Length: 256
Length: 300
Image 1 (cartoon, each protein chain N blue to C red):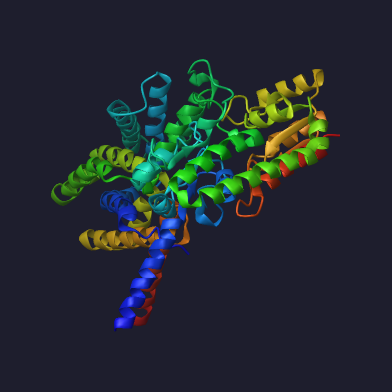
Image 2: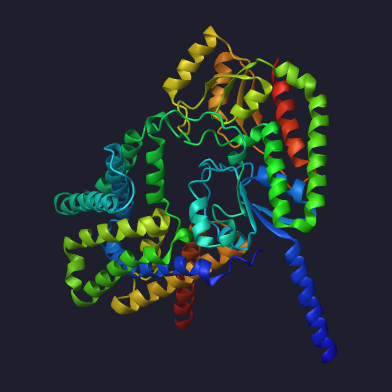
């Protein structure tokens, strides 16, 4: 047990990053589950990573705006390809997503075969560490979250169109660098899955509530038990989702 | 009420005195935690960010690391870019002025020893090369004693009232190393000029001390995992010029070493990369002894 890590200035930025990510990922996650394209975020994150490594091999410096634009661009290319495939392949789209994921992931390994430094960029991109987040890093994700939430409130039909893949690419490229691919996947799928039976605003508010409970308990437990924060939050999100589902089922039985 | 207040006042004074005389030390690796404990004795409160089973190049962020860095009066690490993946961001997050670069509480061991493996030019195609030289300086007792001398001065400057204690502890450390060197002579003689294959380019300072010849590494380039092509080249190399021992750290994957040992019949030895229990008495001495004895015993 260790209580020195329970400090708002240590856990605050990480929690804020989690909330920003949750706000958009709950909305996107519902769509991902409805379309049955669960592993799309892994594929798109790998695409962003592949772009960064490719840029690195070409000798473009690994910091600043250039690399961000390349990450966005390659995630977008991946998203557009997958968006087009929805029309061509129909029910086989999920298979293509799987193939894209493994091609992008192994493509990075091949490009990196002689360059261990590139591996660090890939790791930064895929396993971003939520605890290292600074307030200043939250500006771009905040803007993206505001835009995506506004579009959901005002132009919901965009979520049903091909434009969904563009929003998705932008949100994933930002969130993966902030909190890492495992936590992005958990934030996208778990709250949306356990609230899939509900509709609209009710579903989204319950999902955000479960997400907030998961992030809060995960950060507190990781501080008290002295364990890595990202992995701990993933488990707490899963436990919160499970507890919610069991409670609801139990209440339904009592009512019957 | 009056008694209570004075009691509280006394307690406050006591606690302030306690915090004034205890230095809070943040060590990046267990070997430096051990050294700080040897010199500082009970005037230092030491924590280590990593254990001997972790690769210090990369660690996962835990809230306690930031909390401990905030409280730290003194930071001791290997330096030479070994912790470049996490220490700068940890220092930034902690915003503790005492342990920032350039201040008295910032201590990088590799600043005080003669660095080996300094690359002539920055060439990233050569793998995970550190521009400042090989950062694993703790693998030689001579380096450790050099660092101990500077550390004693630095701690004395931070906590002048304990200067005598630090100097006595330092003397004791120097003496115990000198005694051990005599005791280790048979093993040192046995290891002299032996040819070894290592997993990672980790033991250069140990090799210089024990006059071991490193003839190959299991990694094709530093930081890259062994490839089948490289391993089969090693088998060829060993048929022409057989090494005496394959050495890997306990935190490395043992499979490549086992594979090469099975193909070539060369004995292998797994040695802890650093001090395993840094809180124990004579932890440093005990670790060097384990390394030397394990190596000497493994050689037929």
